[in-house]
Every structure is written in C-alpha cells, then in structure tokens.
Image (cartoon, rainbow, N blue to C red; front, side, top):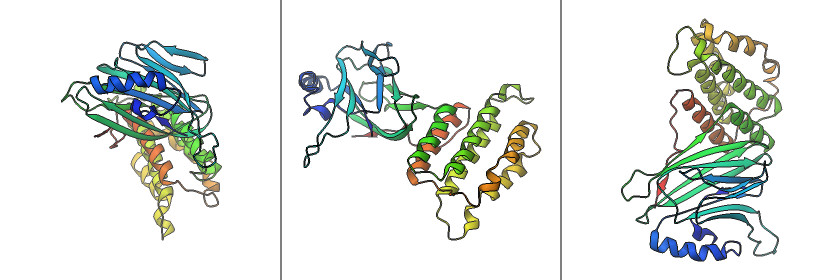
Length: 318
C-alpha cells in the first residue's frame, strides 16, 4: 500500500488519466512544470496549492474537490500481468501547468492502519526534477500532513518537504507497526505508547516551568529516550547486556531524577507494569519500524524546539 507523488507520465498508460494526460504530456514538453500525486485504496489525499485551492478526495466528509486549475483526481489499478487479477487501487491527484511557486500542502487520510510509501517527483521550469521517497504509517481515522515548498525558477533552492507530527500520529505509528508485526509484542508497544503519553504530558506544562526556555527540554528528553529504546530493540546483541534498557533508564534518572520538571515522568515510570513483564516480553523493532517511528519522533522533537538530524526533507535531483 503506497502513496505516490510522481510525474504525470507515470500514469500515461492508464485508461483513467488518458484524456487528461495527453494534455499533461504536452504541458510537460512545453512548460516543464508539472506535479502529480496518488495514494493507495486505503489512503486518500487532498492537495492544497499556495492560493488555498484544493483538489482530491476527503473520505471522512465524502467530499471531492477540483478547485486547482488543470488538476484532477481518481482511482487506478494495474492488473497482474500473469494472472490478470486486479492490483492494488491507487487514488491519484494530478496538477499540471498551474504548478506555481509557494507552499503545497498534502492532507493524507487513513481509512485503516497501513504502511505506505510517499514518492514525490516535481520539475522546475527548466525541466530539472527533484524526487522524494518517504515510507510512513497511518492509523485509521487520522490525517497525516505534509508541506512542500517549491519554486519553479531555475537555480532556485531545491524543494523541501516537511511533515507535521503530533503525539496522536506518533502513537499511531507504534500501533500500526505492532499490528504489522514490525514491533515487539503488545506489552512492549504499550510501554512505548506510555512514553509518548508522558512526553505529551510534559509538553503541556512547558510554559509553566520556573525556568522557561525556547524549547521544551523535558518532553524532548523523554522522546529522545523513546528513540533510544527503539534503537536498543532493533540492535542485534551477542551480549544481552548491551541491549539492556536499564542502563539507559539509569543514566536518564541520574541526569534528571532531581529535576522537578521530571517528577511526573518518574512517578508514572515507576508505576508502569512494564517493569514486571519486560523480561518475558518480546522486544524488537524492525529496521523499517525503527526508521519510520524514530524519524517521526524527530519531527515532533523539532516542533518542540529540539534538533534531530534526518534526511526526510531532502530530495534527490535528477
């Protein structure tokens, strides 16, 4: 199941877009300015251009939009070449000729817990393209938000994509990864979600701390601990002690145990049943789960004023 944002030529052999894309091919050749967007049958999308006009489908309100000039949306499948069986259905939005400078927003709607791939290919006015590929989770009934800053002028800075992550999204990541068997057992997933809950609780009182700062250090520190736990669960250790969470928790307690800002965290941590079950619990994280969840946690850390190195917002040029 994947979400694809690609050039219109990606769909040039499909019946659904045949009429529109004959024109799109011409526009590509003459204007070299295009963008197209598609998602899987379990994920739909609305694209919002820099003027606030929308194209796409919101399944939560059963609303179709086609406000962006030279745009359209619909579903498409490619049958299996050997068996003739229908392939996965993709929902697509394409925008041509009217692609302009500014910020494009993408609202992605999840109808159930799935993993998808977001690919973005967009050309500037000189025909130079930039491509992104992001793997993500989305949970049922939620919305994922992306934005793409784009300037079609030759020599302009490369497009940058940003994902907006909330604590709800991050909890959804853990839930989906667990359901897809890419993350430990239910007890381990539950303990990770409790870390997220505690970070959210700390973020809610950041402005009430005695020493107010630009960033929310307690919430950021707990999210960084959350990422470290994922890394330890992903690590293949010949010596089990090298994967032991207790070392990280002990170091965290030593650093923050006397800080009043962390009082609620340590109180709830000590009450957590995870301590009773961790030795018998299956604790693992696949490479994919580690990458997706830790990068989304990184986006959340950034929103709280922290800094995390990642490559998700960097595209590849042709």
